[in-house]
Length: 488
Image (tube, rainbow, N blue to C red):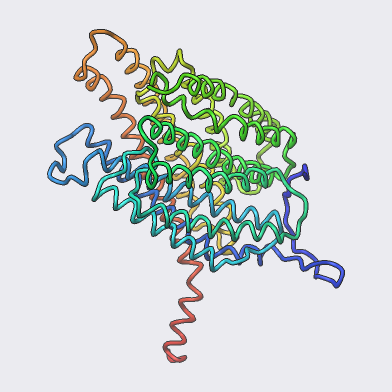
């Protein structure tokens, strides 16, 4: 494995009879343009929709009578719709596009089958649309992060598979034979998602397991989606962009490879800590508690890599705006993983299990880690594909500040509220009304955080649409001139 990061990509020399064709950076970016624009713009729109639904669900907790006559706007439907729109509409979709671009850039190979990849993006968004509408109008399946009805998974799996196959074929025919550490994480994440998603959907929706095993499968899926797909792909993106943006090699790449293998070893077993004190075989819970505690091994390795790579003068970064998003996302990964380890300890779970603390951890993982890493990568990739700079630096700053403030506000409010809630729930004289009033302040603070996030996301989408409008101006002008036949 090549230990040094590729920090500068230049135009390659012309091909000769003895060497295979080598493609320029412009050719590689152009091949990715159509499918990635589709994935990124659709992801930004779904992110805005998910935040709106999340705010609506949060407001309903304060005003239950709001829209009481519309059953499709109840908390039981808007909340799972918001989560699935965030996870599938934004998180997975944008990470898939970024991972594809990284494979092309590291392999110095244009995306093979870019039209098929665009079709895959259409299938994916069709599945998300039918799934979210199905949750709102016909009700969810009741499974966390798998709430979409049975019509959606085949489209999602087909869309993901088409894009993943295009990326894998491109990787196979790559012009750069050396493997960089990001290859391990990105390629592993592609395989992991197809495995965990297909297995979970089959065992929960089409050939449902019986009894408590449904909860076991659901907990296994949510944990693996967070750690193997989002964690794996996210770390691959981080390990690619931080050295590139700082124009320095990735420090201790051997440690990064060690983190990959230990993550693959322990993460699949750690999900059942979500079922502590439940009617689950004791050996399953014991193995999961041990595996959850052992995930501190890859966490320490990742923290060491990040600390040693980020150390030094970072004032001359290639793209400061992209770097600060990705750096915050990297720090959020460390915080979220450490929080998961602590919440998975039985002595801590007695207080925090089934409280707002777990919700806060999940939301900070999605908004603080996944979203920030995706934003940073998009801020770097899109101008290079469009050959157009971002129209407004002010909107980028607004986006960053709102994203950080909103994510931190949600995390702190729900974590503190969850701990207080957990201690009160363990009191013999606790009652539902008292607990509801106690949590109102914390949930209200988190709702303000959602509004702040929504403002930042609107700024991001506005900036992205402005950039694409500028990029498409020559094509629109040419079409108008052709229609007019050269007449003024």
